[in-house]
Length: 471
Image (tube, rainbow, N blue to C red):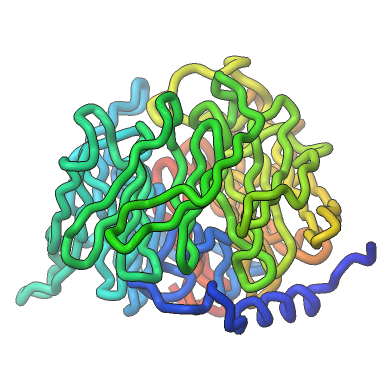
């Protein structure tokens, strides 16, 4: 089929965004568009309405926050706030606790922090900003907190827990909340590692169900008007809350999954958060399964029937922990196979114990008659990429060629990279750091309205700006 141009992609995105179908039915309690959610929007498309830094990008400012900032958001005033994991030492690295950190938007230095209670494997990673610019995140094993910031009389910034939601009645002892997301009906959905899925309404009423024994969750929730997509280590669920807030299963589809963690993923099973996309913005939902040679699987949201199932990668590494990016009817899948996460971030040893991080990024176009691979590149993206609907490029931190780097995980230059979504060709490749201090760790950054990319690494918070942006 002909290769679509960037203008075709732009038109597809515009039609999707302006659709009057269910995906556009009601606003949710979230902050600024493109900077309030870990995966860009409730559909987990990993897109942004803002352009990226582009050619000539450079580090305009940086700081050493004393922790690894896994996800970064921007408030309505353009203030960066991150979910960070504080640590002490390096070898071994000892995790202290998840911490909310506010950064100065000009200097990138930390100006306030608030330590939270430790939770599960990914507790403190999946969160979002609500419409009041509060960080909504799981704390400990059974609570959701809303962290607000206030400017004090002396000009300093103070963080405090503005609201705490106790989930003890729904979350068993020893379990932990791993993901939270708002929906279009004023509820907050949550999921636990042990397979509890529930909602909390504006009055604090909790409704929850337990998925079958042995099914665990390590990824976030994806929400659409009238429902949510939940992926366990065995199956994909389409769910809908009843009038009391209790989630019900609309359909369940098992996917091909292994029983051990593969290198470059955090746990056994699929590493992807489900992605809604297609007609109306949510007619289809996509994952990458956990087969020996993983498949892209696209389901019809209405009934769970499979639209297509095809090998996700050809020349790329065979596996991913990152969700498919979606724009219009196109999907973009980065490979993370072989990426060496810190041991304290993973659920046990992998099989094999290590593998080369080949990287790779591929694009599929999806239609009712199937999925077609359009291009595949060798880019070794090492952060969760962000696809800009403003400039038609995919932005991330990346490594150079594998042959130039020693060992299964690389120590060497770290680049800001932009890849053209239409052609797969690089638009930018600028060195912004050096591993291991700037090891990107597949962390999640965010792009602001001025094109600045805020990106955490192992040792720093980077403010990566276009040449014309001050800093």
